[in-house]
Amino acid sequence: MKKSISLLLVFALILSAFVGLSGCASEGETEGDKLTVSIVVSTGFGDKSFNDSALAGGEKLVEDLGIELKTIECKGENFKQYMMDAADVADVVVPVGWEFWEIGDVAAEYPDVKFIWVDNVADGIESLPNVLCITYAQNEGSFLAGYIAANMSATGVIGAMGGEDVITINDFIVGYKQGAEYANPDIKVEKNYANSYDDPAAGKECAQALHDLGADIIFQIAGNSGNGVFEAAKEGGYYAIGVDQDQKISAPEFDDTIICSMKKEVGNSIYDTVKALVEEDTWEGARVWVADMATGYISIAYGDENSTQQVGDDLKAEVDALAQKIVSGEIEVETTRE
Image (cartoon, rainbow, N blue to C red; front, side, top):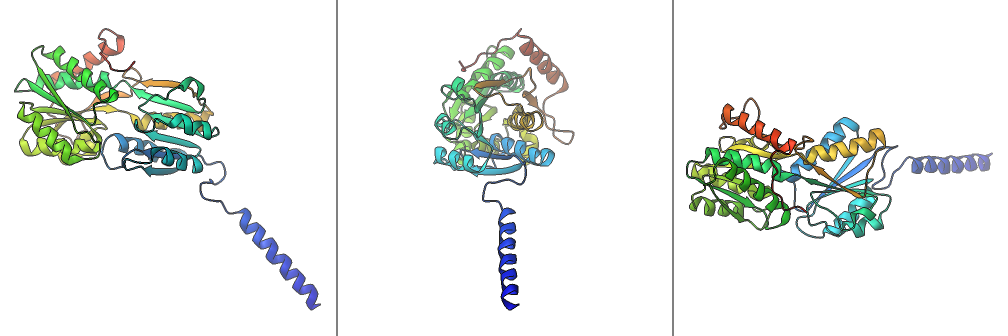
């Protein structure tokens, strides 16, 4: 009898262990059919613009669709390895930043993982079925930002401060300059670069240099470095223009300084792509999607009903009319994109 009881206890323990193991998931596995999305940024979150917009899109996916969200901050290094780390534990990897140029190699190594590269185009994209590249017509929105700046400048000099002297940043600047000159052919547009997207001190120094040249409105195109532009403008009593998010809302401490923002719907473009995958099983890889003003992913934002409104209603109406001309093709905005 004792032997029979012992055998039953052993069997029960084995069965219990088996059931327990079957209910466990190793790191990176999801519960049931829950999709896992990993957002990987080249620097860090907290910039109140580009990276935080991507994060907001991911958080909205969690709230609305119940996906599992993972995030990685590269802090300026190991971009390929971090992409691979993300692909080890996620169904969809969203690299945010030009630094992830090795995405083709990683995508080939992880053919069952889908990649959404934000703001850049992978080499040989046509042969990468698991990669979707999203670029944005930031030149179009920047045209409107330049038009506003030229109309509101008291000195006849405006500025633009970029994170780096690269194609994407210069795409903002050419549109900004064209829009400013559309408003005032005699306007002077000065520019410089912080050489970083994560250095507010460098951004502040760049803003001060532009202001020394006479710029009384400065367009920041530099992520977290741009927060230094806001600080300089607030201290110096001049204006700034935000980027990517509506920064009168994301950086409310600078509401009196930021007159508007060139909004680039990074978060919504990620959200819409993943939502189509979840709800419709739709995925269109091996291509570049240009999110532009016509599709609603590029716009000018002025905050909300609680925000200070430095831009007058008449000027806003002019901006709306110009936006329609851009959408219709009546105004063709210059670009650095191929």
